[in-house]
Image (tube, rainbow, N blue to C red; front, side):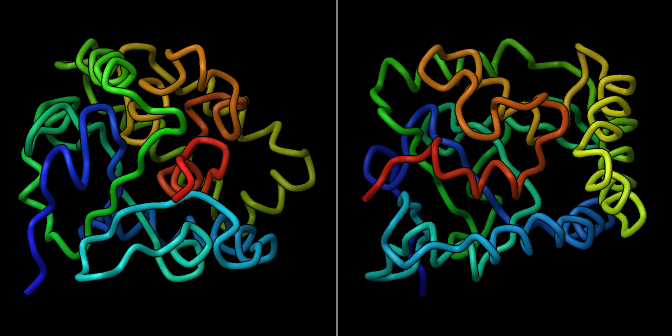
Length: 220
């Protein structure tokens, strides 16, 4: 039986968690994120070359390269304390939740590069500032459409210009999707601002893109 993650050892405040959820929205995200996963597979580097994650399987600490080839994620949020997270969901908007609602063997925690307790407190506080905000349903639908075959083809042709413009048009500053919330919490910290995928509009970042970004996460 997989053990439960321990706060302060396996994860801490300000870390970012990822899971593969099920349900209509999550299944849609998983289907349409296949393009991002294909891009990662094409650019995959040798094992052990990039940052660590923690998946809770006994004696198992896979590298990011391993996870990139074997793991898909559809949801993300910010650790706010022992068994506490801040996340954006379709039904609840941005709200606090409990991490133990996710199966221990499915949740993956990522430690931001250069993380310290004070950094983690600031990341969690940035997420907490959005508590009570609504879920941006229009934005998630625009991301799903952008990652259809036609949408992906047009974005490739226009180098992402169409997706950026549509996302900007549908992005409401006081509404969030899960990956946008995690990205905002990180981007408000000077050391992460503009790094990796955070250099692009935050409303265009998917859970998979954030998960796969090498520049943001600690090495083993």
